[in-house]
Amino acid sequence: MKCPSCDFENTKVVDSRVSESGSSIRRRRECEQCGFRFTTFEKSQTNSLMVHKKDGSTEPYDREKLERAIMIACGKRRVSLAKVREKLSELEERWSAKKEIAATNIGEDVVEMLRALDEIAFIRFASVYKQFKDVETFKKELEKIL
Image (cartoon, rainbow, N blue to C red):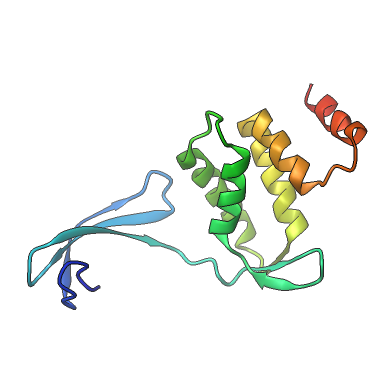
């Protein structure tokens, strides 16, 4: 690992800890040349998961893209990023058994996750995901919650 301060090639690991969710490892590193200390995070890669989209195309799963969409739905709500990441890691663990997954399955799983976390975030995400055509469809979804 290159030192971000001096670009020296060799660094040593000073401390390693598993993250709270258990999905990544935090490593404290020190440059062997200049002594600069920095932190890195190791996370298992889920790029092998392919997503089949509604238009028929297939693309690699992108956690950051999904996380951004979820956090937009959670905007100005009391839902922490850490909690979203924890729940998203649980979903990814469930999806990891498959090589391919339909975007609709991902959407439905996220909708259910948000239903349990925050009802307003759930409605926000569902309104975009389910593309409500009119107020009646939206009201029916609200009635399910109430």
